[in-house]
Image 1 (cartoon, rainbow, N blue to C red):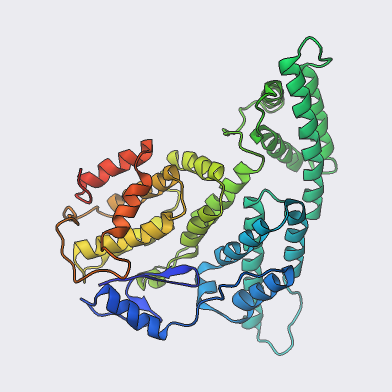
Image 2: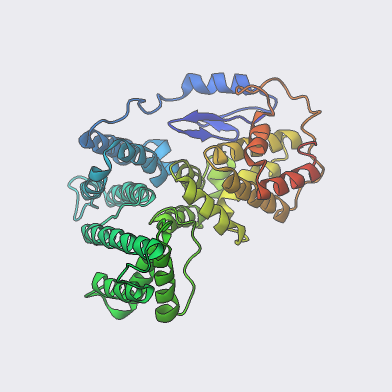
Length: 421
């Protein structure tokens, strides 16, 4: 029987805990007890209160101690520590904190005395994981990762504030306003030119488009003429439509891409995954969603709806238990939903529905199910350590129901016999 425990903020899946094999028929509870007796102490529950404490924690957990959690989670483990630390800080201090954290983990240059080349490479790689996690936390917080970009963002904030005041005046007092949508469009063009001064032409054009979309992402309620001005610049200067947005704040697109790119990268390790060790992409999606805003999650859900195979390594790991011929189909199916429950635990309903739907797509692409899975009449070998053996299945179903995409996925699950009406 398969099982799952959580250690240091992440689960251990499949039939391996601390390299101990769990035999067929072992109950969830017995497996948990054996694993707990040999598992190392999880990371400290006390949260770092100062920047130096956080740096020391990251240096120890990721770089020097060679913890298995770091090897498996990589940058996602750092994100899970840095984002809560930033959230506890006053907003005006967060940007400077990000820049100092990145500076503290600049990749070492030159030879490290007494270290072998392989060890040196590994240390550089681990510094890269830390910087990637810090950068991810910054992006999900709407912060810059370089001093130059941070300074540019300050100017953007001031410019957007003035645009809002002008748009509000033009919307509610058009007869009194000495302004127009065309005038605002002209000022937006000037701002884009100034913010990209000194950049080569190709990069400048790309950066202008990014900044224009960042402006458009903002909430322009009661300042509608500003949206019209931004749209005018996009159509006349770029000849294309702006990216879809719910206008929940600048940086939503970037946050979506941060999660999407890290979770969608190819390169899983089938041998490790066959032992129940999740890939870094799995954690990038789960922990990225944990720390993403509701707006980011909903926009990511919209993005996934238009993509056929957005997270192939993630969904392959989730559905991998179905290929294990040592266990029954019900046991393998329950393990699949155990992984799926952990993956979607911190997701909004629409995003969870997309992820579950993509998982079912993966299941179909690898041959589907030899038979329907009827969990409801299955009597396993006892209760799981979490309670009911169906708890994960029910949690996933409850998470996605009530959304358009989720209800469609539930219909598919009924077709597979996984749930009943």
